[in-house]
Structures are given as structure tokens and as C-alpha cells.
Length: 379
Ligand SMILES: [Fe+2]
Image (cartoon, rainbow, N blue to C red):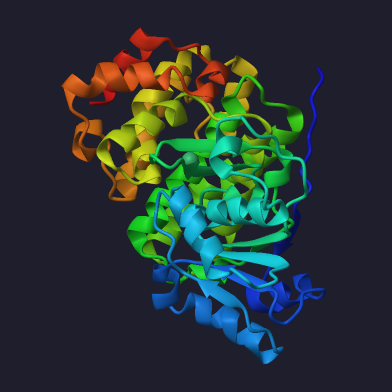
């Protein structure tokens, strides 16, 4: 077996993100820091916790909070316009996946102002220079974007494009579950389920390797145990910390192996109905894992079964019901019709899913007809 595991991001599992951020900014000029975040993080009072630490030490960061969910290139350009004429040396990203991904794009463009991001997205320009250091502080558990080497930002027409390159790895990720204490239950469940699917798909990926397996199985074990608790009792700090760590481990696992059919279907499903990514992913899980079940190799099933906390006599064909039960515990829909899927849209969504790169590494090969069957079964 030949594989490469390359992960250059420094991980700080933190009790207090603001203090650890100061360590990372030791070489930064007081006016050289750009803090990217969003309005929800400002309103929740999370940004002020970080900002007060910076200001205590004399930093005067530029704060840009105009980053929507599903950001596009114009949002990246707005962030760049906000720092025009300033000499920024460090980019700090405080938020969910959208903020983290915009920060990667901004860091790349500040490192090489000659680049046109859309040209990079369409592979017409190559990344040649080192980006500015980006320090990510996730506020959800989560997309895992703080540990992946991809940034997903829509092009100028809003078409979601991932830039996949080792330069997109952040310099540092600071993981502090206490920042997630005020995350609403619905966001806790959808982002948490996204993490669980990252880890399951990474473990079942045909590109999985023994190192990514360690991260994936550890994440699965933790999420199954702690997500229901974090959902029901958001103020449980231990549950938040465990979920924060698990989401990061899940991110490392899928970045090093791959995602699979759930994420291939989630792209067009969420795009068609403007669904939250985690909600789409979660609702797709039962029917997709039922499709995958017969192809799971026995020895991998044993490891997955144990990580999920299932009894010794559990069988892969029971995975769909396991997923439905978990979704019900989280008060989430279990059928795709509940999140808006219409039967007449299935052929187009299935067709688009087969063009997503990760589908080729799914544990069970899936063509257009298979995608249609999965969507119909989940409807
Ligand atoms: Fe995801």
C-alpha cells in the first residue's frame, strides 16, 4: 500500500482561543491583522471575546464581517476592498465554513496580488506563491475547513468551485469548544451530522488509508457519543469540546482520503433547494448508507460497527435505520421530501452528482441510475 499523509497545519486545542491567538500573532504588527467573521458571530458576542484580547495587547485589527453563507467571489473582493492601502500580514478567520473558506481565498490573494481567483478556480492560473498565514478559529463543529486544503467559494456566477491545493492549508487552527456554547440546537445538529458523515465517508472511501482511518474512527466514536448531548444540552462544555475536536479529526480524515456519495448528492441537492449543507447531508445519509451497505468489506464493517457503538450482531443493512434513529434523536427530518426534494428534479440532481469528483471514490460505485434509485428511496 502506498499513500501520502501531508498535514502542515498547527493544531491548538485551546481552553481560551483569544490567548492562544496572541501567541500565533507574536510576529504581527499591531495594525497588520485582518479578522474575518460574520454578523452572527458579532451578534453572539463571540468576536468581542477575541477582539478584547487583541486590543489588550495593542492590536488594531481590521474587522470584516460581511460574509454570507455560501460565499462567492464578490464577497472575497469586498473583504479585499476593506483592507485596501493597509499592510496586512496575518489573516484570522473566526466563524463557520464560509468564513474559513473566504479567509483561505483572501490569504492566497494577499500572498500573490497578481492572481485572479476565478482563473485559479478554473485552473487557468497556477498557485505559485505562498499565501499569507491564515489562522482559523472555527465556531461550529463543523465543516472541518480549518484542516482541509480546499476552499469552496462560488465563482462570479455563484457556481460553487473548490480550489484544492496544499497552499490552502491554514497555518494554524485553534479549536476551542467554549466558543460553541451559544450555537443554537439546530446548527449544532446539522453541523454535527455533517462531521459524522465526513468521518463515515472518509472511512469507507476507496482512498482511505490506515492514518486517515485513525482520525475517522476516533471522530465517529466521539460524535455518536457527544452530538446528542451537545444538541440537548448546549451548555455542556465537555460535549462542546469533544464535538469541536471530533469535527476537526473528521476534517483531517476526509481531506486525506475522500468524501463519497452523500456529498456528491448533497452538492446538487443543496444547490437546487438552497439547503443548508449539513441538513442536506444528514437527510441523504439513510438512503445512501443503505445503498453502500452491501459493498462494505467485512473487516471495515467490524471497525465501523464498533465505532458507531452498535452491538456485535449488527449488520451493515441496518445502517439506514441507525441513521434514521440518530436523526430522530436530533429532531431532524429523515426523508428528502421533508427538505424539499421533488420527484421531477431527481434526474437532474442524479446527473449532476455523477460529475462530482468524490463519487469515484465511494465504497460502492454509483452511476446515474444508482443515484436516482438512492434519491427515490430517500424521498
Ligand atoms: Fe460536508
